[in-house]
Structures are given as C-alpha cells and as structure tokens.
Image (tube, rainbow, N blue to C red):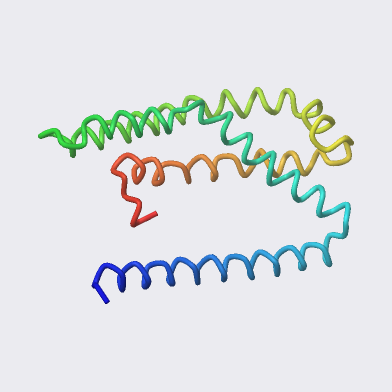
Amino acid sequence: MSNSFIALTKNTSILGMARIVEFVVGLAKIKLCAVLLGTTGMGVFNQLNFLSQKLATFSLLSTGEALVKQLAENVDSDNSREMILSALKSYVILLAIFMPFTLTVLYLLSQKITLYVFGDIKYFQVFLVALAALPVLIANSIPFSLMRAFKDIKTI
C-alpha cells in the first residue's frame, strides 16, 4: 500500500471519529435539553440559536469576507505581516463601529423581532440573551477570517 493511501485512511479515520463524537454529543445535548426544557423550551432554544446566528450575520455586514479578500490578495507580498496587522486592526475598528449601531437598532426593534421570531412577547428575555451573545459570536469570526484568508484548512 502506498503512503498516500495510508495517510488518507488515517486522516479520514480521525475526521470520521470526530464526526461520530460530535454526533453522539449532539444527541446527548438534544436529549438533555428535551428533558430539562420540554417541548416548548426546545422550540425556544432552537429559535434562540437560529436568531443568534442570524443577528451575527447581520451585524458583520460582510466585513469578514472583505478581510479574507484583502488578506488573500496580499498574502505573498513583501510586507504581508504589516498588511495582516493593519487589516486585523481595521476589522476590529469596523466591528467596534458596527456593534453599537447594530445593538441599538436591534434593541429598538426588539419587541417586534421577539413577536416575529418567537410568536409571543413573553420570550423577550430570550431575545435579550441572543442580543447579549452577539459580541461573542462576532469576536469568534476574527480567527476564522484569518484562517480562511490563508487557506489554513488544516487548522480549521
């Protein structure tokens, strides 16, 4: 057998095991949530996850893709280190500008969004949890943008 076949088999096994573990943990999480939250709670929990992801996408306004494009275009240039630091600084500044604006707009529309997404105003506090999670989700986008820019798939 060739070395490439052995390497492919090894990598596939490792990634496959990770997927199996992820699947089992996901099932355990679903069961635990169902037992603790009940049917209605699970629906609210899933809506919360969905809303958090959509709010993060809205808040980023494609700045992550712009960072990836800028870094990927200049990855082989002589001053790539300075360019990376400059792009990263610009990205953080843009997020610092967008975040207060986005959070303000979302808070002003919070009751309408709560009614639309959850169907009842009694879930307003759940919406506030999604809003509070937004800065963490957005900060999480920075390392993935850098890795995508350098096509560092192995690290991802």
